Image 1: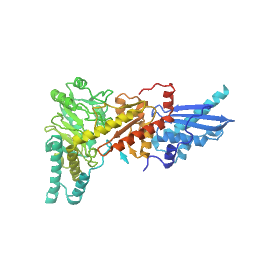
Image 2: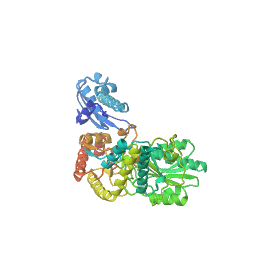
Image 3: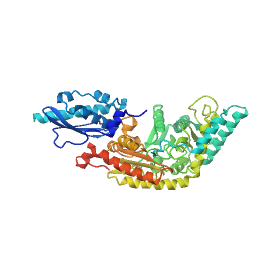
Image 4: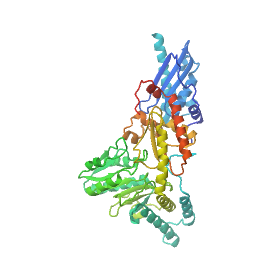
Length: 125
Length: 394
């Protein structure tokens, strides 16, 4: 039995939306203090729609795959929809993650929420 | 495929496989049966015991067959603890980077009232003998120090430790699982009282190991039952596996010097090649290490991703990253030599052997370089380091 589903391996081997958005207007960085994984999300929001999203991740295969899948799921979505993204939905979209890797999908959810909060904070300011 | 995880397990040698098959098909009797067919199995068993004893400088009666390294470690430590308990000596000395078969047994003994001192292994992954000597007390019943570390391959000063223990009259056990068949081991010249070994680490089968116990030391049973292994380890002997283990060890020992020389050369080329990767560091002493062991930390990346991508390139290796352990903590060995969590995550262990060609070595170097560079290209940790927001450690 393989460690990860084919979908996880696909997103790990060919991660979507990797990199940096130079003129991002929302950036979120979160880390799991225990396992050490770190995720950074860059958003380009226009009219409350996520026009572009990119990520950088330091972490294992499932952390990279979770980042990739999460960015795919929120790209082009209104912020209100993106805020509803759950780690469970990310894991399900990847055809599941091993139990002890579920925290990687949590990190993806948190990174997106953190980036959206940053965007909203900047907007207020 | 380039198999570079020989510290995890090795490919069985052809002679060992043939021996195993022949015993299983032609001499499958039970050594405890009195008829000729059973006694033939008994002869095979005792011949294997003689061969193994000879290979490590012991006598046949000092060899006890077990299921492997973990069982041997458990029984050796339990036995020494029992001997100590009877004398009111309940202090044990070991090191911070032993195999879990040792560390977890010691943790259990602590709960039973024993006191355990774990010696530091310093940045180079080596025990300092003067520190060991200073740690020995009136009530010390056992010193257990591994021959060579399973992750970083550092070879401990076993002979010196043996001498100190002999002078201080303290039992000395060594977990030689990684050393056996890879470097010369001799229980007499090393002054070892007990030694654990596992066949699948020296091209023998899995599920077979042995424990050397110097004559006169009383063993405590871990497995109760029949009178096999002179009443010290119950259960019908794995004759085929034991015979194959003996063949494999004899073979490995007979070519030790050639193995040492050729594999060390390849190892050093690997170390030199991987050292070219910026912000990387070799783990463990450069010279006092097993011939086939290379262990590196690469800053800014995580080990599991590295392993998966190397696997895609046909290279099998291992890592001390938390993500590969199923737990959230990185390798206790890397932490013991002072690597901080972030850096320990980006570790890679390559354990090669004589079947690794020079081309394989170059391919590994090229592949690791490319993969580390790729993973760093989208690592926020690496970005922070490069942009000066965090300080490089390596």
